Amino acid sequence: MVVLFGEIFPSAIMTGKHQLRIASFITPYIQFLISILYLICYPLSLILDKVLGTKCKRYHLEYIRQLMEICKQQDVIKPEELKIIVSVMELRNKYVINYIKPLHNVCYIQQDEPYCKRLIRRLKIKEYSMIPIIENDCVIGLFKSKDLITMDESNYGQLVVELVKVYQPLIISGDTTMLDLLLMFQKYKTNIAFAISQELQGMITLRDLFNEILDDVYLDEDIHGTVRIESTSQQQSIQTIY
Image 1: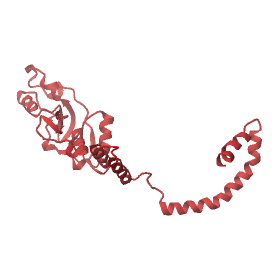
Image 2 (image 1 turned 135 degrees about the vertical axis):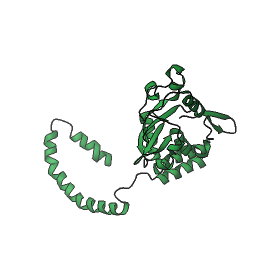
Image 3 (image 1 turned 60 degrees about the vertical axis):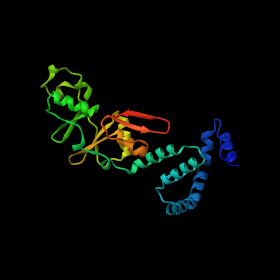
Image 4 (image 1 turned 90 degrees about the vertical axis):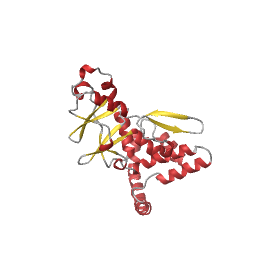
């Protein structure tokens, strides 16, 4: 009945050269019908807003989590997959300030630091691919350590910032959520960010994000060189990403 009187019949009647004349004829009746239904619909909408609220979310995060639990019980998804999905959903409630590495634990160089053997030795020991450049407790850029290590001794004494390509750093606020940080890494095609409030607070990397998402699945041994993942079938080494 709804399809017949609400779609098929009106379409058939309004097809042809007399559309405007028909529409003009039935307009007063439509306005009268709207006025009558308004007396019913408006009070009903107020009641629904009072009972259900005006800003109800379509899907609550907890409902989605329960749905994932049901999928796990029915072997639709694996427990490891459920763990990762839930961890990603919880990133919106976690803030960067709680996961940053303090500046005194970061391998960096000063803006006026010269190229020398001591610096090369330090970079080789740390084995980090990207090195921050600091000036007056402010990060002004990043450079690739391989660009410096491959240079010859004839460049000794020159400033590092004059010898390498300096990349723009990603600066964020400490109250940025981990989910927003993940989206920023994707948008700006980088894996390092620096948290700043009144001053430089520290650094956070894509690996820190992975640690939070994968939890104990991703084991960080904190040994400068490699990070190892152990499973029942294999052991895999992954080079640090910063």
